[in-house]
Length: 329
Image 1 (tube, one colour):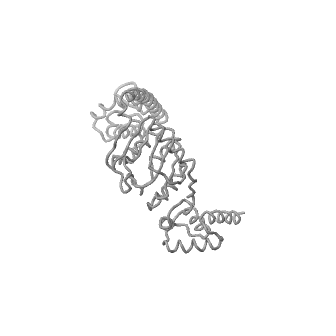
Image 2: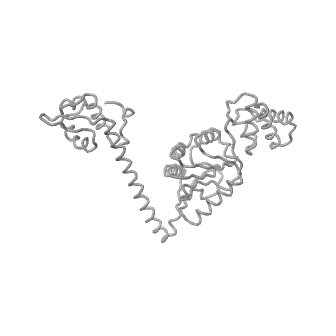
């Protein structure tokens, strides 16, 4: 029997054994139970028990006459029908979810204590964080600062999947977020997938999903995240969304499109130094992202300031951008 990675129809509700049998019948053409059982490496009795399921799935049909012979439904027809059936099931489930959400909202209005959930433990917080992203349908808002409950060494693939579904993602990053060695690469990857990123000093970390749920730390501990709060639709959630929008309007766009540790060209390094420093990152964090020592960064930065006759990072950024535009014209 083929390894698990070779199975293709699990997402359509077809079991591995059913798929093996169907594919064997597609390859062999109309077959008796005995012939198909041999090709699928099943006992004849097992195949006979599975036959109603194969027919229900629309994968096989019986040919007239004796002995009993089966023929495979053409894959284009069978799989399109299964996919349409699964889409109908998803649509029905979403409709049912809407009814249940409405019922829950009525019940919650009568029990205000259920507007808040307390989650304890880093693993449980990370699990809920990813679960909320999986459920997102319209918009994700994020205020990002350490400490992190999730593993920042890995990209947020659940958020990427949400963006592929058409979900809008806006995030404001605190400069200290980039003290994590892998954060720069993760943000670059996220923005390449469609995330809109800005940077500013922010008072707390926060994730808001579809204006229905918010996840934020329960305490202000700066070392670990061991408890978190889920806020459901309420005046408190409205206030958290308003806080995000205020911070978003005052935050600066985060331009990390070319800042990579592998960048070695002088123009690129110049751009990267200024871009990273302009975000508010400390010299040590910038040096770590660029793969150089702090002393080397400071020496190169002083040289750049001298060349540009600049005394501040803002001046250097403006003049470096102007110089690069002139070189490109």
